[in-house]
Image (tube, rainbow, N blue to C red; front, side):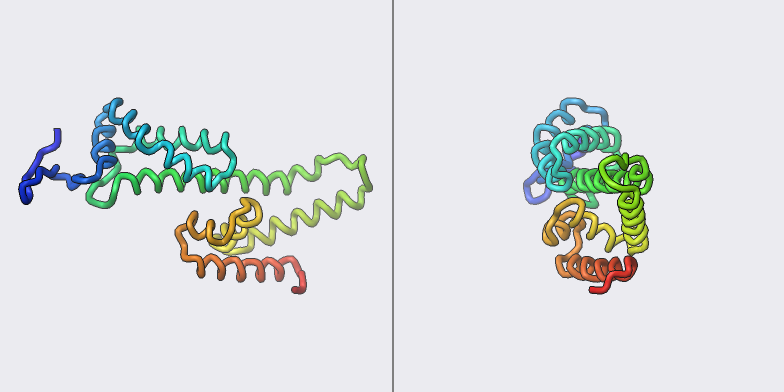
Length: 199
């Protein structure tokens, strides 16, 4: 039970969660309150799912990540500090981080497929020379992407593999649109140099 204090005739919990129903629910969830967890899920699951779906695009992966997010909330609600921010923001931050982690994991899997998998592709449909060229080109792209700074690589991967616009990438990463445009321009320029392509 939260200790209450009266300010200007309004009762407020001492933990500063007045006016933040999500924070109230998170505090209850931290004590193992399953009813509060169900209420929290009903209150935020649609919004959390929408955020995840915008990042991942894939509905089934988004459903998996939604489950992971609420499992993490159940397990770590005790780490929520109401004096450091809104409950909704805390939940959405977890969701965004999980979604971006899934994008990065998918990208790593794609990179691995390019590095290792291409050599296993059958050559019956065309010539051996074409397979060798494709494999070498894939390796060059992976190496060139790997040489980019993390911020530039993330912007390029989200744009070209994720299909996001620069505005969407700005929202996903929390960086200003101008910064994303600069990262994309500089990253693509560096990528061309790494690949030995003359613009």
